[in-house]
Length: 257
Ligand code: MG
Ligand code: MG
Image 1 (cartoon, helix red, strand yellow):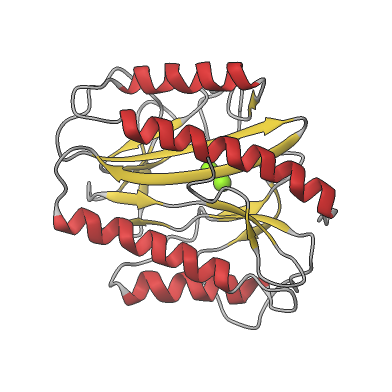
Image 2 (cartoon, rainbow, N blue to C red):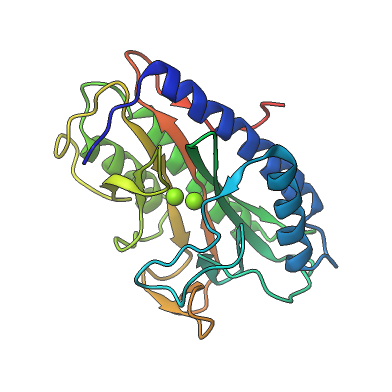
């Protein structure tokens, strides 16, 4: 079922989005060489508890995972791209870290992801992250009332392929609001002018992700973490947005605090 949200409900999702944005600011600043992933998980738990928010990941048990998940954030390093299980790993100079988190406050969910480079960056990693961020911006720009879902997917896919990368179609964006995953699915590639018509009140998580030299992924033996099939590095950018009568609202926009 596809639920359109009222302006008041969208504002409530924006409160959650602003919290997530601040949490990601906090954690990305902490993500320095020598920091353990478990410390980042711990800090995320503290911030969620202090705010009275609820993790959408804790006890998450989808069909593909070795559930239930007992963490509040996904931390994916280098070739890991999605659902990275926080584990005992000390970040090293040059690591590419993706952080993905969804929480709910007063029953309303927001979901956002960022990739950052720990310490000194390689040019090829900067390029990869830039591609996901530009693809996300393009997807948001296409998220206009009257457009179709395929316009968003096509815009994201055009940027990714324009950078010379390929698109995996197994995991993409999604509707969200009262829960973390609602209809519709938002592919990271598609045909403009096709699919669901976008209406004001539709709330979506757009999330382009890329592996540098493959569109195939494999499961880590931990049962959760998805890695690029060829070991190449990966990046992921995600925002929660709302379709309006005018420009889309980016509910997890950076620099809100
Ligand atoms: Mg996410
Ligand atoms: Mg998501």
